[in-house]
Length: 459
Image (cartoon, rainbow, N blue to C red):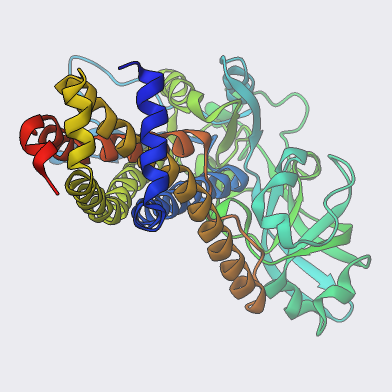
């Protein structure tokens, strides 16, 4: 029997018992729909987490800071890096001094392959005055590239108009201390009072400072600067990993202010050179896949680093396990539907015993009969799989719409929490087809074993 004839005959047999075969196909569709709905939810949640991490700026960011010395066992000094303390050095191998996080380090790191941007994390104390209200707070800096950070999705007002604009964005909780209505501050001027760091006087060299012939290497002078409030933000960018700042200014402006930072004061107290340093550097990598390579390169240069690479690995592992369990539970309904296929085909054997006997009497082989029942099982599996994918897609849309309605009622932005990629569509149909063919093994074998003489006598 040719394959074309087997498919045509299988289609005719399926049309003769429309109700029973339709119910079996519907059972397969329900099983596939549950599988698609659950897996699409897992895929959607994983994509949501990736989008939020990417928009937060943490997914492709490496924080660079100076390695610190600490006392090891027995009072010997060890090097403490980004997360682990190194073993205390032996007396025969003197340690290298920790690298300074300054402008030279910034330029050096910027030359590494895969680095898109390096900017200092400038953070300093200051007083902001609006009218007759004044508050002391911590000011942080952000570059123009931080405009796409997810913290600014709910920004009231606008982002900085220029890299060095005299503008400030206030956090809502802090803005409420300066005005009863925070939005009323947008477009208004506030006065910033801060401590400016003045460099050493002309003629005073670093060697003179190291020899103790000059003072601390810089002086602190009180300054004032008028800033324009351009926006109000609800939360701290980068999820607070860079520390809490109630006011944000452009990075270029923060560099021009030369504000005294804790890093410079610690260097003076610790007997350093007094040269201007940064608390840390923020390295933005071109692609999240290149974070590990860039981080390793920075460590080789003697700096401490921190990134969310390890956290994202754990996150991907979590979603892999979640997808596995969702797939298992979704497949249970398809397993139940496979029993319906077995039942349908076994009943078809009982009803068509004379037909099978005639086919074998005129020359049909056991393989031909087996192929016929496989074709019927495959047809039900394919149709049920295609219908199940469509039904699962509709279920996902309904779940997503209901979730977004709930989020809007709680004043939260809408999110896409489900996704049906093409690999899931094709995989679900193929999986339904395979399950159907496996379910047809027993009925096909039983039909092939029928004795044509006994089958022709069947009434």
